[in-house]
Image 1 (cartoon, rainbow, N blue to C red):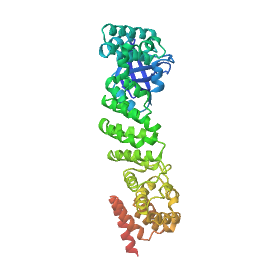
Image 2 (tube, helix red, strand yellow):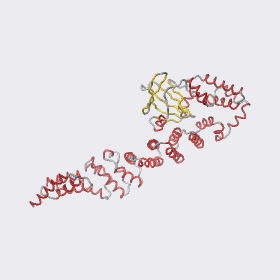
Image 3 (cartoon, rainbow, N blue to C red):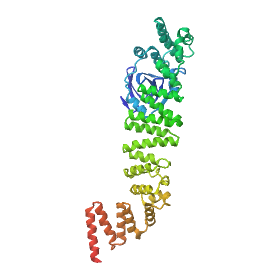
Image 4 (cartoon, rainbow, N blue to C red):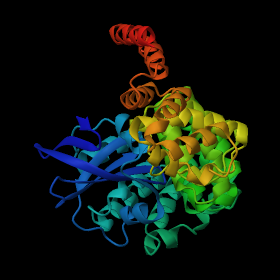
Length: 465
């Protein structure tokens, strides 16, 4: 059972809940770091090529262990993260098999060198000497059976995992293995076919090189390790902004083919927030906005387009107007959305934007707040700005309430207009103009009884005049 980043699992017949903090990828392994509710116990959950192996409570990590390498040399994502959510959704975890049971399983499923590669991930919990003893046993069996390539690959794994071990380092140069060692001096593309396990390990160790990174991505995708592939891309883009264009196209392709619309949006948000280079951030923003528009997520569109001072394109301003038109005042934050950021907008779009904004401003604020919010734009000769200026100037003048009501009506603010006309009637009871306005406005609002009342009042005034 899983709730967000909580995993419920049995360990030694005991039910435990674990909160996942992060996910690490390295040389075929995926390792979840998790903690008990009290944060007093740490568990690492091991996967190999997305298949769950087992989990272990970990009190101390050996400095020379393979787990230490995974945590320091691997690529990581921290909770919360949409890729972590996706990984957990696609993972089946119920119990933690013992290491003996695990060894029997992987020994039956995988080639011997790959089985030892997997077993070495647990050298934080097993004695290195015990793992090497198993390697030596398999090595000798291969030798006796004349399978020298398999024997050589056992030595390769032993030397790779434990480079100071004299047994592997001394035997691997023996003349019996020279014809095999020559293959390992080949180009990495050749090694990917000859020994995929060794090749991937090397790709991970040298992934900072562009050519190597591209080969690693190709291998991951060929094995449908999509989350791992995308996690590397996310990490790569944040550390190599100059390579953005080369890989963002790949990311978009992967997202389109493998993730839901909401997952795509969540992942694009992560990438968007990671970018420090404005040019790259803008490219992600454009793609993200496209997805948000297709899903009609107008609040998100509004937040993205108003959170910074980057000048907007014509299309983005049109999109902002569309978003505002679909939102009420409660969804808009006029404390973070500042009019000064609109000064570079062309007059035609700005007028349309202000006209769309004003009903939301008046829904939550009075004319004084609205005027002050629009102050950075007051130097512009726009119909809406001129109207707000005039309204602000006469807002406190009792004898100007008829004019004020008419201006509110121009802005389609009927409740405020009605208040102004009612105030004017109090000041000038025999003036028929505000009464005619009230008949009209109540009629437009569908308030039939109120409209009839003022129709009657209008007739009475006409009789007495």
